[in-house]
Image 1 (cartoon, rainbow, N blue to C red):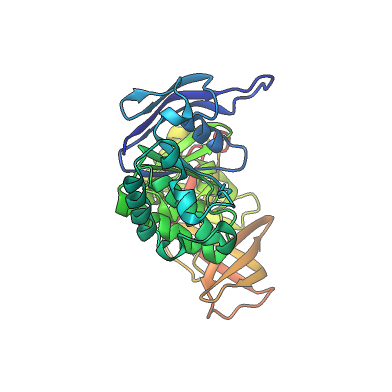
Image 2: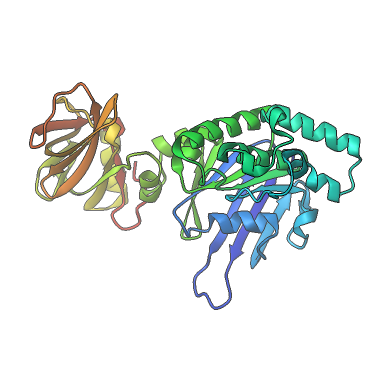
Length: 367
């Protein structure tokens, strides 16, 4: 396995005024599992295809191991691709599909058999080696596609939304298998997905891309607790973070922020007040995650608000409660045992530590 380095990687298509990828720099360490996430059209798949050699580089460098591979053909980059579609040969058995890449490289038969047998054991496919793809479930076909990549022992695995064709239950099962596979192989993996839950549950680090730009790179915990800007804060976490425009007011002993209608009130501590002073803003965007809204009153610093219940979504252990507070709509996660009905008025609070503040124009986190 090898490291992968992107240096100021840029992609612009002919006749397109915008950049599909704009000066993206990223270091993927040897044996690391990194996810590229972002909304559709953000450039994450373009980045993966450029690493694979399926897209040309407008400017910048791609380094795999100690080689700059910009001008190398895909077959010479020592990478293995796993696509959204399984791309299996329907007339070949599982063994034939997994061994095909080795056969065309004229690897000796005994080495091919050993490699396929070992990959089949890792992926629990030993009993299916004589079957054809039509005789397999979707999850089994995806494991065959993974096995075809594993037998090559590449420098890096590149995966482009490999679970999107599976149903919800199989996605959960297969992402756990991929995570176990990564730990077992110690493989360098770059995984593209628009599903932030996949990224949060599997990746060592996540790279968030938006409109061709790299917004933030960090561990799932870092991105969840300390988002660099409003886009990352809204993209990471499910349900998404609540955002409310707020006005800054000076009070005795510090600063507070209030919503336009005065129905939300946040008393800030000295550190938060100093941050707003340094930013020189009279307005901020407040962010708070649904799971951090408490339906019990709280004293001291933090957020206080009153809201009416509009919709209740029962999810077993929890309920997602959609609320209206003045002109603002919010979502809170509450214990399903909490007696609630539509139309109820709740007093909600959040601790100072759970509140995020963003610049109203740039979206950059102030806290």
